[in-house]
Image 1: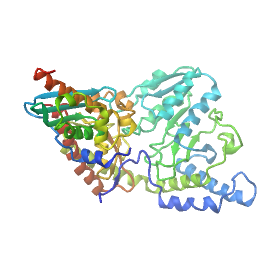
Image 2 (image 1 turned 45 degrees about the horizontal axis):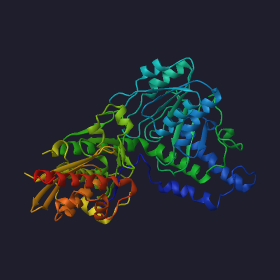
Image 3 (image 1 turned 60 degrees about the horizontal axis):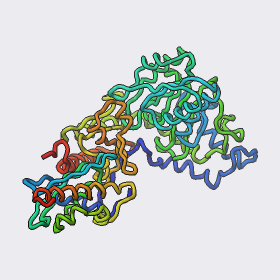
Length: 387
Length: 125
């Protein structure tokens, strides 16, 4: 039996046992509709209230500024479309390497008459605050930037951007799905007006997330129905999920700092081990301003899916930068925006480490990946394998 | 993505991988949509393939299909190999998921090209 090593925590994480325990009573014991006035409903409402307090305490904001949603994608949609719906017209600034939840939301708004600027990034995947300043227009209604890119892990200079947007009086939306609960976020010091976060990236359940909305931010709801979430997001709350999200946040507050140090060391150990054993490999993303557990490497002239399959057969779960769908492979748009040449970008593999990742796991991955890449290259007609 | 045990075995233990010195025929095919590239080398005796070797750049199914392709080619007449259909390759790896059928296309195309090259060198192309 192969060892099993999960290195895809940026995609999803296992639910923490304490989170699961906190959630369980809300499926069949405290099942009432939190909007109901009777005791059954009040029990559910208490669970939501506790979760809201846990998250507000973590972000050091008012609990009225937290809105629960069904996922990071919905949070991004609500944050951006909510501002757009309140303004009805205007200009949006975002970057070329955002998650599709942001990119496609902004593209949709463009079709509805809004205008948009997609800022470039440098070779490390970082947006320049100066570019944000230059792109601002009198009719700019929101700037939306990710806290960190999920593929390469580069942390964006949110604090600097926040200073600029605050000075300009433009709301700043941060897609914090990859940073929330992994690195400190100071919404006040960073000038963040809207912050998307998600449960399943931080050992909470899937299907639950949230959006911090700074008091006073001009917003309209985009989903209509009942009076839920102070009329900002209609729909009966996912009570068990929200309770789980609150608990997950409480645990992250406790464990985040120490874990970041440990994962940074393991991430660097992985890169050093691979670099020492493999020719023509490069690290993508910023050398230091990067998520603690993210290590994205490009193996020149090797196709990333063959590496992912080879590692899968060794029990290792990583993700490929280029995805082949219906026989059509596109290199990662993030790597393309970073200016990484195609013969490198097609061979990108992301490892994202997490709570359970051990030194032994990392050494096993290094021991597996070095001969695998060598073998794939001996079979390859391009690059090193060329006769 | 679910692959057959046969495909996984070819990926894990590729047969006849690597370059062949002084081949009697060489052919390659590129599947531009996904940039997969397969190249086959043939050793021919009396009009039949005696040995085939491959080099490939691509996803796991393409590499596995190349390995299977070398086993299929051995014993084929050049004329038959010059018309080998993708379905023959797909069957040899125990089937392919619909979104990976290009593996059979690129391998069959490269084998046919190698066979045509060998025929041409023999003045029969």
